[in-house]
Amino acid sequence: MFWRRVKSFLSHAFAVEPESGLSDEDVALLERLAEWITKRKLGTPAVLFLQACEPLNFVGSQFLTFLRPFAQMVFDPAEYRRFVTALERRDAIPLLVSLIEKRMGVGK
Image 1 (spheres, rainbow, N blue to C red):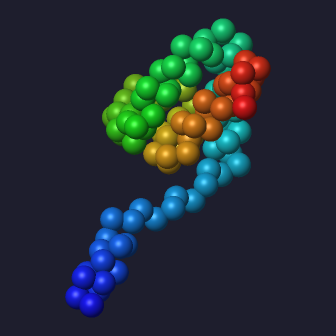
Image 2 (tube, one colour):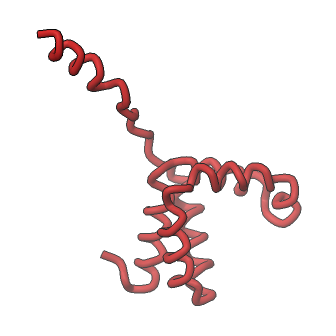
């Protein structure tokens, strides 16, 4: 009886709430990025890099936040902010990889 209560109490202790999905604007931004990458024939290196760095997507988004003052001189500030916040979500990198693969004709 005691262990059942402990197990029931701890069953949700380390549960992660599901994240809300990406907005339509985020998906459109990732689609434009995938198109830009594949137009320049960088699809394969981009997919390899993204899959290798997928576990660190949140750390990468925080690094991009650190670079914001410099990046906003080159990129549109609103789109850059949207890209950084999209990378904080776990499903952004797999979606970007699948968009690149689909444009390369390799997709599932």
